[in-house]
Length: 329
Image 1 (tube, one colour):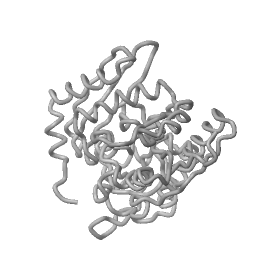
Image 2 (image 1 turned 180 degrees about the horizontal axis):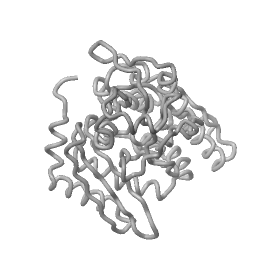
Image 3 (image 1 turned 90 degrees about the vertical axis):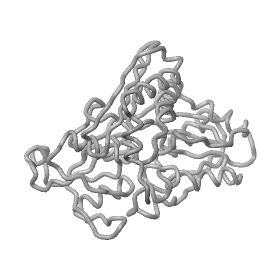
Image 4 (image 1 turned 30 degrees about the horizontal axis):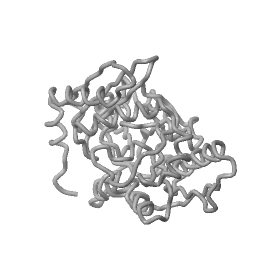
């Protein structure tokens, strides 16, 4: 074993630290005696919880860029990411995703303000019920599912968002002003599981109600491409099924050249030797909706992802993505 620790970079949020603790636990189990050190970063997306992520270059710029820079500088040997936060439509020269952990729940969940129930939501009918989210994809699906509900911009780490919801805080807007308070939030179930708050879930959306973000529920560990020692350590905690699903889903992003403002969703599942991949593209209003689904050999995930991406393009995905591409920050 090396006499220096394997340093893993991560965000300071409760959820990110829980995910990184799991990576460290798996590494220590696979390599007894390995010294694993967790290095915490407060990224631009964590410091600014008002602006839309586009201002920081999307999720990649907001949550990934600084940690990647530290790897390139030799300050870290690896970095933990939620795969859904890693851009899929751009190259990452010199870096490689060396491990994907077993996938957690991929679906989204509804969290309600204390004192409210699903009956309040169902009875909203234009009475001012507000659901908070920062994800364009979630907002688009919510507008399809609940056309009488107001969708408002809502930022923050998972635990922070719930605390704001419970206090009835208003959310500051990027251009000034405020919205809210929110009556409900839509969050990844996997994140709620990581921070021990599944008791707050009022409803689990099925993947047919709200198709997840590409890579949602998968923890990815990245390292420098030519750091073979670290890659060898990380190979021992790799989950083959997660890798196959991630490659299929991210190939859709690559083909569509999606950006951080694109309401693109994708989810792959494996049964025996087969993989089924579903993907969709929605406009921000939720009124225009195209989808594609295919089943093929699980061992050729990129081919399946490419076929789905091309099918979506044939159905008009490029127009929707271009229309949602903002001209200004």
